Length: 115
Image 1 (cartoon, rainbow, N blue to C red):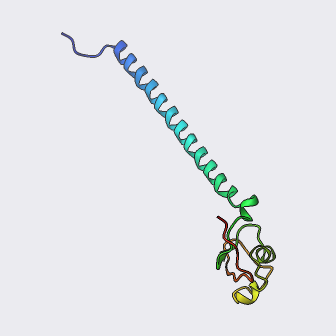
Image 2: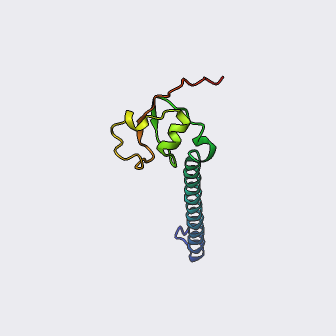
Image 3: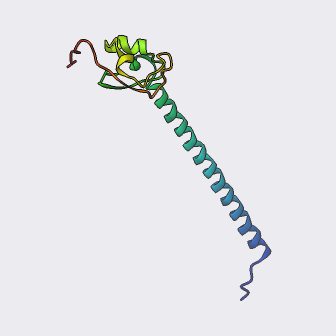
């Protein structure tokens, strides 16, 4: 019995190995693309949560974090606090308000709780 591989069996083995490596490479690229698309769509969803009417629906707690597109004037109107600048000595310029700025809110009228 001759146990040495024949040239035909070597060629077949190489073709099978080559085809399987291509399938693995294509599958890996497809998984990477799908994962990156999912991350992009999640990032878009996070950004959309701050826009539109949801910005107006945010509660006016005693500690308030400024959102994107908000000004002290819009926050003052929404929270019914005309003295935001006076109560927040860390705000030196009322026009220099940025998202993430933490301010203290003291509404002049108590808000009604929605049920």
